[in-house]
Length: 625
Image (cartoon, rainbow, N blue to C red):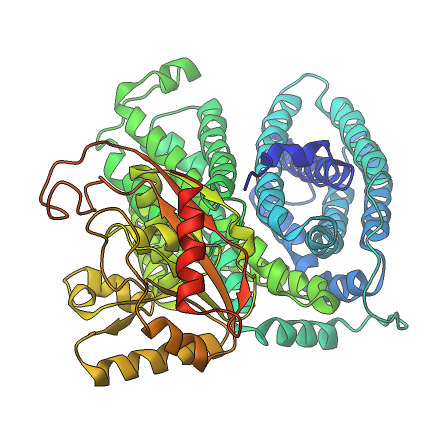
């Protein structure tokens, strides 16, 4: 099965205008917000209504406050009205707000600019639920992970570019005039691109809207908690923003105090982090094979812990001042390990966040999807406020250094890694298996779409090597429960994997064990799971398929499910097969060999029997000799 590259979505009208609109929105938000903060920091005392430090803290709070006040109402509106229309209205509101901001910049009215920052936060609060709830309506299920990867990539690159442009504008002689013109231009561009977004009509009956923020917030939060997986995704996404806020907020002082850099070095650190997240987001789509795979999440979380701790261990003990220029800062060999750790931290963050967004969108019921996104935004805001409180506690009260604070974050995140693993160990191991098998072999998958996306499925495959189960587990888009020999099941390390993936041990010579195993198979099938059986009962001794044992007929008779024959080809002669001697005790004939996994047409269990399946698998295997 071939898949189109994720970039192909950027050629589709159902995605490109949406992508440009959200990217321009994030870009303009950061241009406006950062220009304002920089101008406040360097403004004369007489031109400010209060102290610069107090104004900067108020500005941060004013931008987040609307997410608490309006997110729930925004979610209700997005579920009841066309989401594309809402996005256009919000972008038109941005044009008006930025028009007022232009006047405020020219007259240097910081009080008005702060009020308009609150309005920008408000339009972002209304934009978010419509933005993320629209994606599943315009994208196919197999495109959802690609779409989210592109969205996160565009968002963080827009944040980076907006922040850098803000610094450039604020440092120019005519900063207020340039800022006034810039924010209007970018707002207009965002509105124009929103006009091309295809319609995304509501799926629920429209009712008269009443603004009841407290009641709607309670209802929205309750809806998000109804599905445990969705709520866990929300908490995971919020934790990501907690970490992101902690790191981004500390970059200025970290660059100055711990690394000896100047103001330009802060932008360089931000660039590394943002580019890392963009790379991680795109890698996530490739690693997951364009499917929503929760198994990637603990991998990303583990990376956050390792590379977050790396910032502590790689930070030089003695700071060498390099503030004379950015080039001296970047070219300092003692700082390169820090730069690498920061880039890898961003990559791990991108790998962590994309599957959570996609899974949340996929599992959310269509009639409340926008409200779930709204609940996510509220929790994000809560965690971002918590990040500020954490920084005050660890840095101001406990007097820790910034590298020590980063180490504390990595240690706390290690607990998150453990929690995520125990929530979905089979997904984690399945992803690890995919990495291992696709590193050892060139895996070609054919007709795996014949495996139904839902319902109980019995996969029947030939048995060539000890890697067969791992290859199938990594290739199948759904988790597989394997019926396997107890002696292999009980091997050290293998047993941990088997338990996590809910494998079914069986001892062929023990009738009681066989009955128990067949009963477990029936239970899994009846519960809608996929079970794989190797009906030969052992590895092939000559590369040919041995007759199928009668146990497969007993399994088929017990459950009325879909049966899918699968043929494995290319494993004979590998290190894990029996050709040329016992498996694992010989030198393989070839490395990184091509392996084909070919799924035949599905059939009803009433039609299937051992002989028919034997002939079918033999024919499938023969097609790839």
